[in-house]
Amino acid sequence: MKNLFAIRLTKYIESIGLSKRKFAEKIGVSAMSVSDWTTGKIQPNAESIYNICLKCGLSADYLLGLTDKEIY
Image (cartoon, rainbow, N blue to C red; front, side):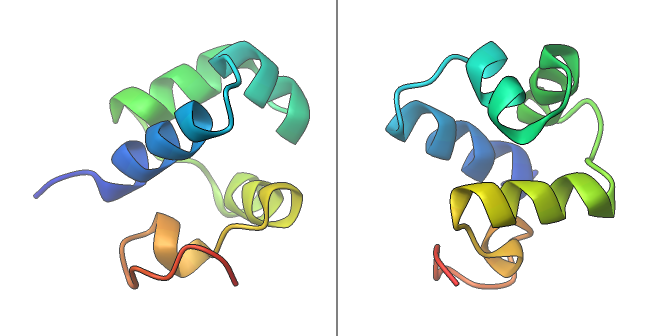
Protein backbone atom coordinates (compact mmCIF):
# COMPACT_ATOMS: atom_id res chain seq x y z
CA MET A 1 0.00 0.00 0.00
CA LYS A 2 1.28 3.46 -0.91
CA ASN A 3 1.94 5.87 1.92
CA LEU A 4 -0.49 8.58 0.85
CA PHE A 5 0.40 10.75 3.83
CA ALA A 6 4.04 10.95 2.69
CA ILE A 7 3.05 11.58 -0.93
CA ARG A 8 0.46 14.24 -0.13
CA LEU A 9 2.56 16.06 2.45
CA THR A 10 5.53 16.17 0.07
CA LYS A 11 3.29 17.48 -2.71
CA TYR A 12 1.89 20.19 -0.41
CA ILE A 13 5.32 21.32 0.81
CA GLU A 14 6.57 21.56 -2.77
CA SER A 15 3.46 23.43 -3.89
CA ILE A 16 3.98 26.20 -1.34
CA GLY A 17 7.67 26.50 -2.16
CA LEU A 18 9.08 25.82 1.29
CA SER A 19 12.02 23.65 2.24
CA LYS A 20 11.29 20.82 4.65
CA ARG A 21 13.19 22.77 7.31
CA LYS A 22 11.06 25.92 6.84
CA PHE A 23 7.88 23.83 6.81
CA ALA A 24 9.00 22.18 10.07
CA GLU A 25 9.48 25.62 11.64
CA LYS A 26 6.02 26.67 10.43
CA ILE A 27 4.30 23.77 12.18
CA GLY A 28 6.60 23.60 15.22
CA VAL A 29 8.40 20.27 14.75
CA SER A 30 11.94 19.22 13.91
CA ALA A 31 13.17 19.09 10.34
CA MET A 32 14.05 15.43 10.94
CA SER A 33 10.40 14.67 11.73
CA VAL A 34 9.23 16.23 8.47
CA SER A 35 11.94 14.38 6.58
CA ASP A 36 10.88 11.07 8.16
CA TRP A 37 7.21 11.75 7.37
CA THR A 38 7.85 12.63 3.73
CA THR A 39 9.98 9.54 3.15
CA GLY A 40 7.41 7.32 4.86
CA LYS A 41 9.90 6.23 7.51
CA ILE A 42 7.49 7.12 10.31
CA GLN A 43 3.95 8.43 10.67
CA PRO A 44 3.18 11.63 12.59
CA ASN A 45 1.25 11.51 15.84
CA ALA A 46 -2.25 12.95 16.13
CA GLU A 47 -1.00 16.26 17.56
CA SER A 48 1.32 16.77 14.59
CA ILE A 49 -1.44 15.99 12.10
CA TYR A 50 -3.69 18.45 13.94
CA ASN A 51 -1.01 21.17 13.74
CA ILE A 52 -0.42 20.57 10.03
CA CYS A 53 -4.14 20.83 9.35
CA LEU A 54 -4.64 23.89 11.54
CA LYS A 55 -1.63 25.85 10.29
CA CYS A 56 -1.89 24.86 6.62
CA GLY A 57 -5.64 24.61 6.08
CA LEU A 58 -5.41 21.01 4.96
CA SER A 59 -7.92 18.28 5.71
CA ALA A 60 -6.73 15.41 7.90
CA ASP A 61 -8.93 13.11 5.82
CA TYR A 62 -7.04 14.25 2.72
CA LEU A 63 -3.61 13.73 4.28
CA LEU A 64 -4.60 10.28 5.51
CA GLY A 65 -6.01 9.24 2.15
CA LEU A 66 -9.68 9.10 3.18
CA THR A 67 -10.76 11.74 0.66
CA ASP A 68 -9.36 13.60 -2.31
CA LYS A 69 -10.70 16.94 -1.03
CA GLU A 70 -7.60 18.88 0.04
CA ILE A 71 -9.04 21.65 2.17
CA TYR A 72 -11.50 21.42 5.00
